[in-house]
Figure 1: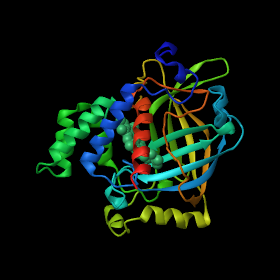
Figure 2 (figure 1 turned 45 degrees about the horizontal axis):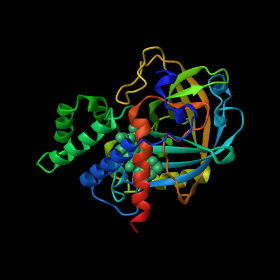
Figure 3 (figure 1 turned 120 degrees about the vertical axis):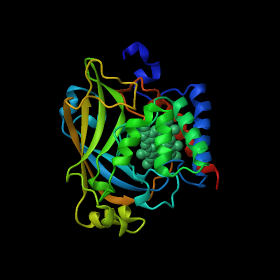
Length: 324
Ligand code: HEM
């Protein structure tokens, strides 16, 4: 990717100007999700049930070599975090929505924010907005037949090979012991820009300081529906949840436009700092964890899903806040 591939608003590191095409497609994408999973008024159209927390991010200073982004210098910044289950149905038990989400909003000076949104699998199941819509519609069509969840997954992979890695990763997931002991991948490539204008493609990960811990199937079966929220509440009585923010540095030839593929495992990892989370809060009004909303010193990559998410999240926000 090079500078000429980015539009002007991306180069300023601001919210991407939504193309009319994305806005039209966003409506289709949210319709496709609703057709597959039903409408739950007032809730997000994906990751419907979640819990918001307050915390702060203390940068390590190692990011300064790569970016002028305000949260990656030396000053601590406040953050809002939302942990969630991936289901579109807010009533689904924690155990039944295998992938979990962690969305972080850094609160920056002068009313700016940067959102980094992660999930517990390293790749996404669709390469473009169009194929996302196609896959969700196909899942809907197949599900109205007699297929169980496993056969449905196999059938989708046979239609869409791009989904294979992601669906295998979901299949391999074990129930997490805690939201605070899970690792989250922000999936898309971003570009860090330093004071000299040097550009570095990166992928971000949130790594739990206390390590990753999962439950056996037997232990998980004993847990109440909301066990992850209960666990977080108990944990915060004694200790914060701490996550390290890692930037994985892309090298020449690493695709920045494909969220369905990982980069080679030997890529350099830079420790950008630590997020401390210690308090559950009510959801702040107007919260939209749009991952394309970033501050200067960062750019969106050419991943078409990344910029598309702005319009899709705005559409979901509009529907969930105007329907009751
Ligand atoms: C075409 C691609 C995608 C579409 C259409 C889509 C759709 C959505 C929608 C409609 C919401 C609810 C937004 C709101 O009402 O505020 C949402 C939330 C979420 N999505 Fe996606 N998504 C896409 C890709 C991804 C990817 C690649 C990830 C992985 C990092 C992801 C992770 C999440 C998470 C963690 C949330 C919850 C955010 C929060 O806590 O507020 N999504 N998604």
